[in-house]
Length: 377
Ligand SMILES: Cc1cc2nc3c(=O)[nH]c(=O)nc-3n(C[C@H](O)[C@H](O)[C@H](O)COP(=O)(O)O)c2cc1C
Image 1 (cartoon, rainbow, N blue to C red):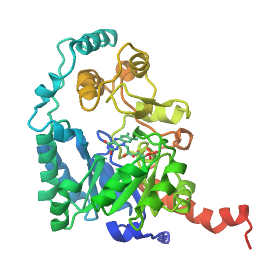
Image 2 (image 1 turned 60 degrees about the vertical axis):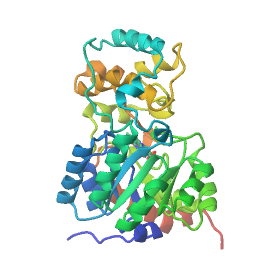
Image 3 (image 1 turned 120 degrees about the vertical axis):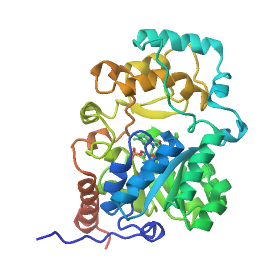
């Protein structure tokens, strides 16, 4: 007999047209169509990590998602303000801003980590250039994707086009100042992302930042993010005034995530001390499992460059490791972003199971757990 469908409904479900207030976070390189389809089919909102795509591959990915599900999904892009200062500059042009001594140091690191001298990443420039980013946005607009999320930066400049097409929008903030910019831009949902989060993250803890953003952006609904990985986390998010969650790390152990079995094993074995903040990869604060590469860079002689220059500097090293991710040799570099909730990330489950367990856990906690721990009448 099929199990009874559980009801767990908030305003975010109405705004985004989903069954459960669980948004799978955009994770560039890790959340591709299989994960998006699985999460959306399970009643959450699947989000493609669209920033690492090129316009043609993004278009294909959107078609693939639509073949796999008729439910809403989102595309996450990185739209930092610094892009506007680089209008008209190509990927090669951006490289020319990087000081020579940084290239010398990168050469030393290539040698140290055994990256062949003649290897050059063939990734296009969409992620780093204003023109490429505009093209990625255009693909989203042309396809009338249900939701666009801005992982970095603001959506105000595309908002009229989104509204015209009925596209919903999600803005991410790691502090009140950023959240208020999303209010000004009239986004539909604001993610309040805490320091605990995997990937690029801010410096205020989830418990502190969520209620402050909730108060500041009322009546816009907020999804809490950062270290949320089970039903208790969902209940805690609601207690802080959020109306849903934006979760990335929780989905990394699923068969649908673009994660190697080795990366999954490392996340399962990790303790909360292993998910460190590093600027080694992108120059921005990023939480990932510590590697020899992050250790060497973070203790090295040069301060990180800003976005996107640092990312471009380390591109060959990072991409070579990624292309050889099935050979253990390059695990010393391989980027494995992960939240501080490491010990909660301890079993391989499908995305559907992860969502079902989160909803079931939250209902049990609301029904029995919390009433069993506190008397207030
Ligand atoms: C593997 C991984 C990759 C990420 N990549 C992106 C990205 O490309 N764009 C983005 O907006 N956020 C990215 N993030 C951050 C997530 O969107 C989200 O804020 C975070 O996962 C929430 O915290 P949690 O990991 O504790 O669930 C990434 C996070 C992880 C774990």
